[in-house]
Image 1 (cartoon, rainbow, N blue to C red):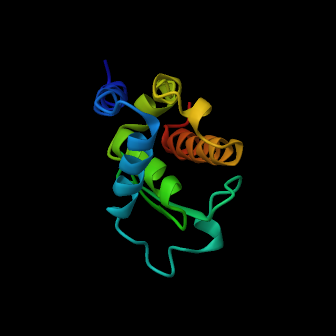
Image 2: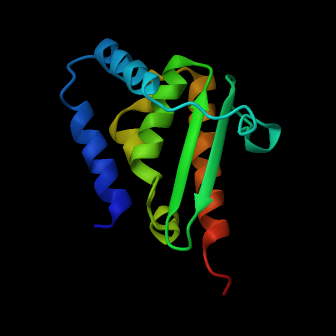
Amino acid sequence: MNEVEKAQQEVIEEFSFFDNWMDRYQYLIDLGRRLPDLSASERSEVNKIRGCQSQVWMVAEYDGERLNFRAISDAAIVSGLIAILLRIYSGKKPADIVATPANFVSALQLEQHLSPTRSNGLAAMLQAIERYASDALPVK
């Protein structure tokens, strides 16, 4: 099991402690409130994620071994989703990110409990993370 799979499993187990979706939504909002803000210069068009109804900015930095992500949104639940994505993908190896399907989405039943626009935004953020990871892989 690679680091991305382990992180996904930890998030799935954490959410299993909540009996209902109202509690999960509140937890997502609480997670999102803890995200560090991005600077005004980082909240630029180049860092904006397309496909999200709310505004989302994501910054990816590659240190030659691991990808580190920082991101923020202007919407509470989306910020919570970002917090989950950062826990799963930030600090991980690009090859592990690309090789690991986002199984946590179905395990947490996010597609059933998020609005269609939020689901589209989550998909856009996942695509951006995968694109950053693919771009960081060595050229073959």
